[in-house]
Amino acid sequence: MNEIPSVDSDGAARRLSALIRKRTVSSREPEAVDWAEFEAFRALLPELYPETHRTLERTVVGGHAMLYRWKGKGQGEPLVLMAHYDVVPASDEGWERPAFSGDVHDGAVWGRGSIDTKCTLACAFEAVEALLKAGFTPERDVYLSFGHDEETGGRGAPAIVAHLEGLGVKPGLVLDEGGAVVRGVFPGVERPLAMVGVAEKGVTDIELSVRSQGGHSSTPPRKGAAWRLARAITRLEARPFPARFPAATRLMFSRIAPHAPAGLRLVLGNLWLFEPLLLFVFGRAGGELGAMCRTTMAVTMLQGSDAANVLPAVAKAVVNVRVAIGQSVESVVERMKAVIDDPLVELRVLLPGEPSPVSELSGPRFDALSATIAEVYPDAVVAPYVVMGGTDARHYARVSSTVYRFSPFELSKAERASMHAVNERLPVASLAKGVEFYLRLIRRIG
Image (tube, rainbow, N blue to C red; front, side):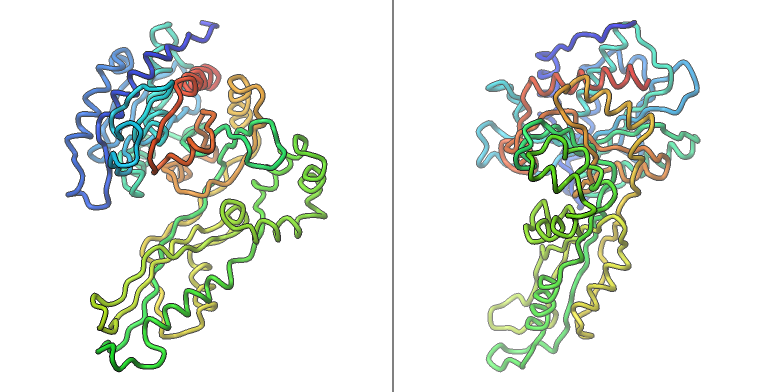
């Protein structure tokens, strides 16, 4: 079989629509999860992709996570395609189409999970189904790894990795969600950028707390618990972590430089000279640019007393920290203590998360991924980058040094912003491109 099977874009849209209608909303509180929806989702898959379920071996791991094995002809290092089928909550308020309708409207599939990430799950299934119908058998094993609680930092993906470790499986290439094909990220760069995540920052929650005797607000003490907590927060805000570019970001700049306007090309192409200036600009800009060059801190939760006239016995804040490559949770905590410089402010790590190892930035696996992207998006510039958020892919670093994060869709700024927000939708044309990408990747790697 030499030709790539044709993509049934309308059929793919209908099947993704059916998957979106299953309300697989995850929660950190297990009793708040409607597990019947997850079971219904899994029961629907054989109806939508019958040839896949006749041929591939499916194992349910950890109660709800799914691992499929497509046995290959030989013994080469397997290919693992990842996605998660849980989604974040959504009400219909503010949506143009109902949040779990799966409506195919105005050239797009609407609904929670249409981008994050039932789309990649559907694309993987669409590709496998088409290849099986065409009589294709991969040279090496292909695994489909689908977690059920990625949105809550859960246990599905680690359980799958532990299962594979027990079988002695060491993947040659792992691909999960992450970057996409985007435009307008760098001023003046007109060509689309295919951003391939090669690592991800660590996600850590740290609680700050100050204890006091409490009491009535009519006789407040000087420098009480709330004051000390506020001072600790302002000190952290005033002294952000030092800025630096990891090797992956430096390589990203070098890939983008030839396609940038003259001034930006000069800066990006000569980091040996302009790196201090670029770090200053990125650091002052904050937002996405600032996050690219340092560990970031964001105060996301505050707690004091339960009444307006009662002094808090304990004042608390939770700081969500995104730990940059090259740093650790321990080093972050030590620096925060030094910056706060107040022994009455206690720091406690609620949820530790180290940054992932950096996957190989060159070599046959990265080159194969890049070549596949170039076939589907010939105008795109492939560039590595560090993912700011957390994905299930980080767990696979235990078994593979070639773990990448790329969603094979060209997404507008509005479409990217719709994830975890209202009006999440994926154009049917983008969905078809995603299916083509997986067809070509499986053919190339498998």
